[in-house]
Image (cartoon, rainbow, N blue to C red):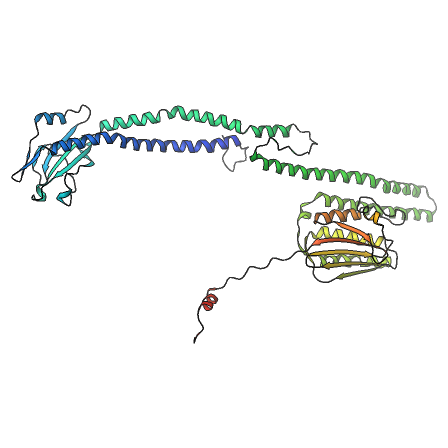
Length: 494
């Protein structure tokens, strides 16, 4: 059976469903017995009540009014017939309202209410009462003449004990309840069998998952999956897809790191060996400077690899997007790169019309802007210009980074966003990861980055288009009671 809610032990879906199916059945069964007993008593009362009515009617026909006085002509054989019941005790009496007994048992209880009108007499009524410690069923009627006073109305009553009724009701209840002792266990067995058959797809699904190889992250086929399990399988497939992307990102990171780190580490080792063998102080300083440059290159490569891994991995903190002002964010990034541009002798500028609200992740967008600016500064010679520009047309927000450097061809513009692709390996330092990081971040924001030749004739323009974000309008204020009353009331003096 299923465990209680809130427990830490494993829960059984089979037991849970079985509980919820059998618990109502066990609850309804006592109710069915109570209802059966109630209706069985009603059914058992009907024929015996009808017999009591006939006895009352037969005795009432024997009562005559002679000179305003009641006279009962009830033969001894009729009285003996009333007493002839072998199971129940039968009582009767014929008595006036003022207590004068004409025949029968004087101590039988009288009806508590009289009819309001003599025209209503003659009807036969039924009631239950107790007599000599026995529960009796009564049938009674009033006999009256409009000329007689109410105290001389005649009451005819016949009563009997309820043993026959109880026996018949018990037989009816037994005939209904006893088969249930066979039907209910059979129903439990059928429910058990039906649940076992109905939950078989869950067993097949579990076996399918258990039979998979550890490295198999392909989606589970939904062809034979029941309709109720399709959302579960689809959610599981979505999780497998996310896991597959994470594994692929990790594999790419390991491959990229192994490939890219081999060259700078080999260079560092070579420079270190030269420095160890060198005895000339000037040559030794030169070797150490080369080692420092190699360390800087390796450090920058490691940082870019880690940034790309974090971007592709989709850490939770980097998946949250919120409204932000892209113009203010880019301005802050440009300010951070001003000193670098001054050292390179490059004029770094910033242009923006007004606020530019988008939905995005501030951390990732800073990385995107940093890589675009870094790429532009690397490919722009001393004395050149790099301009960061924000264009907002209320529908989209465009980020442009324009330079007048060495430029780029249309063929290369499609390749620069691939990993480790570089336009000129000989002239500039770099790993070819900067624009790949830019493209990955742009795609996470529902956009794509592009790099095209500068329409001014020299250099290139990097461009990323984001969807503009509009703040939802505030709900209309609810009028207070006084303003509503003032609006509905006519001005004073009208």
